[in-house]
Amino acid sequence: MTAASEAQARSDGGAEAAPAVGWRARFWRNEELRGLALISPTFLYALLLLLAPVLVIVAFSFWTQNYLEIDHTPTLANYREAWSDPLYRVLMFRSLAVSALVTLITLILAYPMAYFLSFHITRHKALWLFLITIPFWTSYLLRVFAWKIILGYNGAVNATLMELGVIEAPMEFLLYNVNSVLITLAHAWAPFAILPIFVSLEKIDRSLLEAATDLGDGPVMRFLRVTLPLSLPGIIAAALIVFIPTVGDYVTPRLVGGKDGLMISNMIQVQFGKANNWPLGAALAVSTMVIVTAASLCFVGVMRQLGSRFR
Amino acid sequence: MKLRPLTVYAVAYLAFLYVPVLFLPVFSFNDSSIVAFPLKGITTQWYSELWHNDTMLGALWNSIKVGGATAVISTILGICAARALTRYDFRGQRSMAALIMLPLVLPEIIVAVSLLVVLLQLGFSLSLVSVTLGHILMAVPFSIAVLTSSFEGFDRSLEEASLDLGEGPVATFFRVTLPIVAPGILSSLLITFTISLDEFIVAFFLSGTEPTLPVYIWSQLRFTARLPHVLALGSMLLLMSIILLSVAEVMRQRAARRAGTSPSGGLV
Image (tube, rainbow over all chains, first blue to last red; front, top):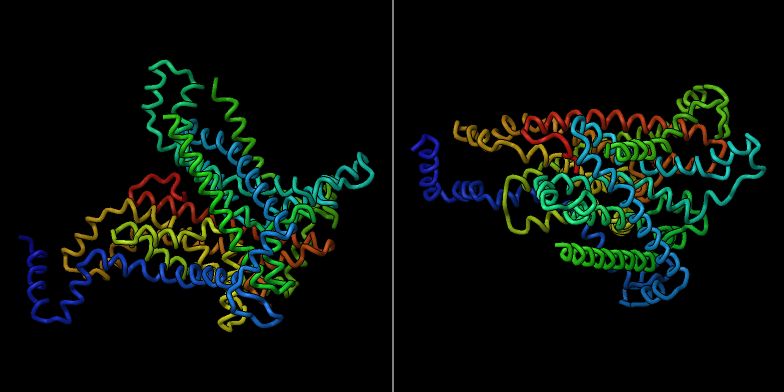
């Protein structure tokens, strides 16, 4: 018996003799309680400042704004307005369509990059990863702003072409429409898609690829039958990481979207700001969350089905 | 050579990531208030004018205060959570972790709006404190991600040795655990500071009358005449972020090496 376990045994005996010490000793020896105690500050913070406020928003969506007062009688009127008014419908559909397209573009662009990183880079892998993650951490606002500078009415492309005498008046179709929102979002979210795909590619057991080659698969079939299905979890994660936040994006549509490129979050902001109709804004926000969650679950289900068919 | 086209693609992809952002610093030195090629000449006029702009300096100071508080508090919360998740098993662990990590995927506007409503309902006025509260929420998941890689490969027998030698759990944490994960903690501090420094949406909704740097930039975007100044300011913000992140990356790799895990891909 080691000295330490002897000491442990002694303290066990002592615990029974003195209950106050025993409670503390038992607490410190109980792994589960120690884990709970350790995570509780962080968990309580998230509970109080994230979950509780979101629940308050849900509650608000069932109330009514009476000028400066809030009428607490539960009603579905906000949802009826949010789901039937053509303006909100257009904004919601546009948000979903833009996000889905951005997700698709981002995934298609990111996959070869992630593949390259995982299969072709042997030296300086950390440096490559770092180069890709830098834009991921730098200011989102500035990345969007850069596109406004490039595409804008007085932006670099227009001003340069006018300076060189190629065009007489600025081309207006470059900025302030859905296309500019698409380009900007696909650029701003590019790095977010690479990392999850890269991680899932890294996890693939390379001997499986050798086995496929030995069994007569060419590079293309090997990719379609081994690599692609095995990287599916990464593709799903990347899609969700891009899709969910872009539906609620505020900066890009506001800066480069013009009137025709506005999305649902711009309307949510208006309701909480100028229009001062919190319950309606809350109903729009809750509807967005519900629709996004439902769309994501459907997507995950479909992808899982596809994945299982491969095996 | 099957490798070639993919290499070309990778380089082109990196260019696509970086070139649009490089327009900011390039035009910030251009001696013209119109953003266009060809460049008219080099000037530092826009930068020097910024230093005499008291509103901008105030916003910078606000951002540093918010960023500092966010970095310290979210890293402390991150240490607690990362340690609890890597070292212990307990009931409800996964759902607790899911709630804490939720801000990673939740649209920022939802976080911003719900905090706004609750704070105003409780009678708080909007200030830098409310921005900090929101930023902590957004930064904690990143802190946990960074710290988990240094806690994970951690050799537990070192702690057991310390306990066997008679140190209490608290002393063991400070004398054994903390020094080993110190680079990870520093990395977390720098990354959470950068996140706060660059964050716009939450700051935009919760900042009240005291703007942070991104909120100030947003307010200046309306004025075409102010564009060169915004470019100069944006370039400086970009440079600051890159320096902070580079130091954080060096620290993170050191932390991963100390913990004995592979240094690549730790941020994921």
